[in-house]
Image (cartoon, rainbow, N blue to C red; front, side, top):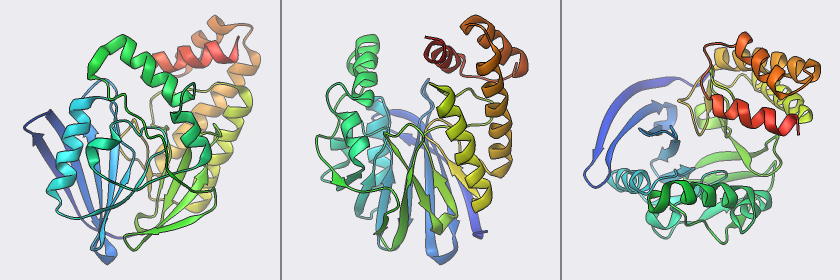
Amino acid sequence: MKKILCALFVVFFAASAGFAAVNVQEFENNVKLHTFSTEDNMNDQCYIAESPEGLVLIESTAYKPDVQAFAEYIKSLNKPVVGALFSYHPNGYKTYGDIKIYATEGALKSWQENGSVWGLTQSFIQALGDTVAGDLPESAEIINEGQTLKLAGMDFVILHESDGEGYGVEIPAFNAVYRHMMGSKTHNILPAIPYIEAEIAELKGYQAKGYDLILTSHHAPEGQAAVSEKIAYLEKVLELAKSSKDREEFISGVKAAFPDYSGEAYLEMSAGAIFK
């Protein structure tokens, strides 16, 4: 377990972009983890790994005001950005300046025309208009699953994700792992039975690794208790996906089993994909 020397919760106001909350944790070896939480319907979480040598960004966010607020917070730290690990949320990347972006081939492809992230971004623009940060990187330095990057003196291990497009990141300095979605008491997008099975195996791997922190894009950082809860959820959802005769029965069964879970839209998306 990495020792947390202090934890400081900061409420940060960006004059040009409204309100966001930042949680800063300081660890051994003079490294810090900044969790930037947007106060909007996306509940996006962006992360900054900080060492004496500089800053490493992990993900961006969806709306232009939040992108601007994150950029202002980055600037307030008065250190160089030595790299950005963008996987599922590279939106608004130009706002952070001339930064080096790292991505797997699958992640980069998802940002390009007709890719999954590109498609979601276009749908957000159609629904919400110019407030969405629609600019996506056209290029990146390609990284591979299993590769270890050393940025700002910290190691970042690139991990496989179940969707085969984006990537996860193990961060030994914090004994943490970043993945796109998890979140206790919230539904996730689960497009197929093999995907659910892969997610269960992945999370059991997190238990074996003993990570202290699970960092995700749509939920505040959590620990191993949340991993156990999510495995139990996925196992029940898998059972219902196999036994339900149609999407309505599946949705009804999941809601009955997890009545206090949020993210109903994600459950609807899962049902639509599993029961095509």
